[in-house]
Amino acid sequence: MSAPVVVAVASDSPAQRAGVAPGDCILAINEQVPRDVIQYQLLVDEPSLLLDVDRGGLRHDIEVDKAAGAPLGIEVDSPLFDRVQTCDNHCEFCFIYQLPPGMRRSLYLKDDDYRLSFLYGNFTTLTRFTEADLERVVTERLSPLYVSIHATDPGKRTEMLRNRRGGTSLRWLWALLDQGIEVHGQVVVCPGVNDGLWLEDTLAGVAERFSELASLCVVPLGVSRHADEERMRPHTAGEAAFVVDTVEAWQGVFLAAVGRRLVFAADEYYLLAGRGFPPAEAYEGFPMHEDGIGMARSFEMGFLGEGSGGPGPGTSGFFRAVDGAPAVGFRAPRTDGHVHLRARGDAPVAVLTGELGAPVLGPLVDGLGRPDVRVLAVGNRFFGGNVGVTGLLVGEDLARVLGDEPEGHRYLLPDVCLSGGRFLDGLVPDDLPRPVEVVATDGAALRGALA
Image 1 (cartoon, rainbow, N blue to C red):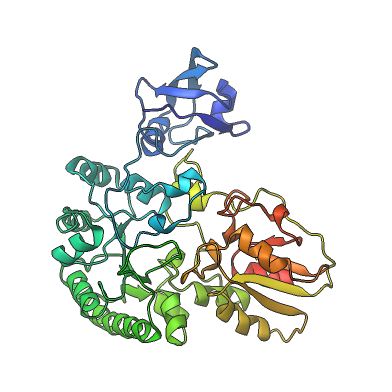
Image 2 (cartoon, rainbow, N blue to C red):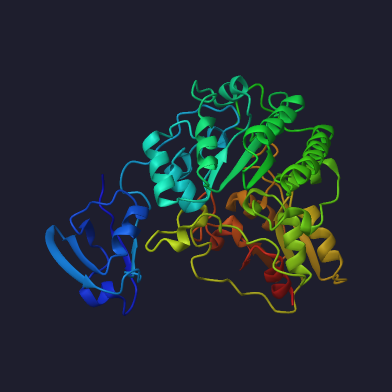
């Protein structure tokens, strides 16, 4: 177990007034050693704190007095202080197995930790979940959680996870729901594996055993050019249409049975099937916005000034409510704080997006009636395959496309491509051959940038 390191101390906070400084290692709080930022939060809620701190190899006791429940004012370097619970499944469709070599080491970590599910909205399969974990989740009300289901038939789920516990671990999902824990589910549909009648069977299993799920997203398999599993392939347009029809039929079943639609198909299915997106009210508050459920419709709403739509990327999970939990990974700050504004304000504008974003943005931009604004779709050669989401665009592909574009134009880059100011391939916006302006990934922000 490693001690949490203080990376920031809020100005005029109880921690600063007591003398806590960035770089301090917190060894114990009131003689208890926290194993994660969740336990840390419970400990620092107390009004009187004794922090056992290591500073430069010397130990200090720091006493802090504050109001009960008041923020301590510290941000630590990691959400987990003990070992992260890694994934022991070997799913054919796992995208981490499809990553190219040479990327940042952290991108290859497969976690299956319920604490990261609570903190950041990561999906867990529950195959490593235990009675002790259940007791803690229920006692501390660690809700909501996000669970990968994929199939409700025990044999099919075992096959898909390539884990003998795949068929039995859904008992934990039932136990969580039975204890009133809010859970959002996910089904990754793999053509020829768990689609067709198997998808029908899965949704029937949800109706029978897990109808208390807060929501269930049905998302397509992503296949990069680095995939080496023979059974994994992209959907055809006909298969996508079948998924849309199946999900919408089951929405009617769930509406009649539990009073809500419960299950939703990813935007990508509607695009591939050539179908129009459902109306905003059909998404029931966009509970699975980050998983590509209703993103297009909520973006349109923001662009047209018809409301905020979904919550925006990087907002699921409760890390913002846990004092001191760092925003990491997908939920790290998008930019490095530097926005590039180098082109003339009256210059022609190109809106950069992925191949799946282009058919969504195209009609919105066309509706402006401005010949000086265009959508510039960037193909993803870095990952290849059917990867076309904007969030997986990398600097290498953007540089390839921008290198052939005219100078002096404005190029608007959605911030969903970045994490901490870097693309997934390690490049930064300054590495691109044309200056770009980083814009928040929502319709209102794009409309404002164009205005």
